[in-house]
Length: 266
Image (tube, rainbow, N blue to C red; front, side, top):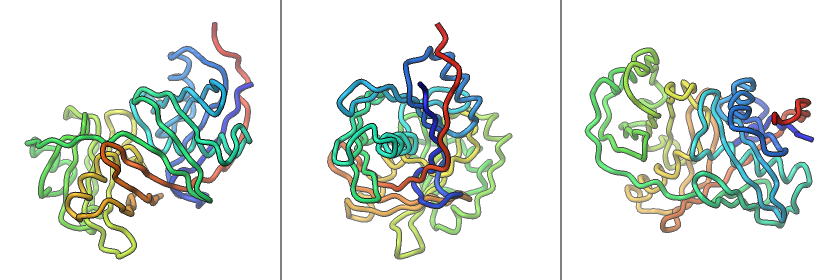
């Protein structure tokens, strides 16, 4: 049987955080996974196959492509496993992924994920990107295949109204925009735009914080941070930098469960 879970990750509000569909069931061909993700049409679908002893194979798809790393999809997957009783609440979940072994542990109402740190490097970015976003970045950096733009204030990040047609005309994978928080409740804020992979604005992007955490840890002189992503739905993360690893904790809420009735294609 293949079970479906619709989970809001990085929030406990019914209409907050980042929604993902979690598919728990047998292996299926990549083409079928891609078609299912397009059918669900959320920013991410997480596909889980049990390997025994709280060990799973995990793959993530946007409506158009498979991705190497996804924070909210992993959080949603871990939440679904525990909610379905597939693993004990005190067990450490292990996921085999394109980015190596990832783990998840339960800490009360929070789930803590352990992810690889993403290295940042200097980048001279074509001004057309900032023009399409409608901002003047203080600096730009490369974070793997994505671009990181630092702005001067939270208000500037909130005010962005990207021209997605202009962005799609440029080469890219994703643009993360960040600034210090104007609230004492958080250390920094961000937004993320990825029209190149079928996601104009992602509500909450856990994987981006693998780059944002070391960026802000260096500037703020601290390794334990709190962050908020300023999409319309919004979400919050508790974060730690531990050498070459980034730990992120979030909450999640299941809105519905169901069953996929089609058997795997041969």
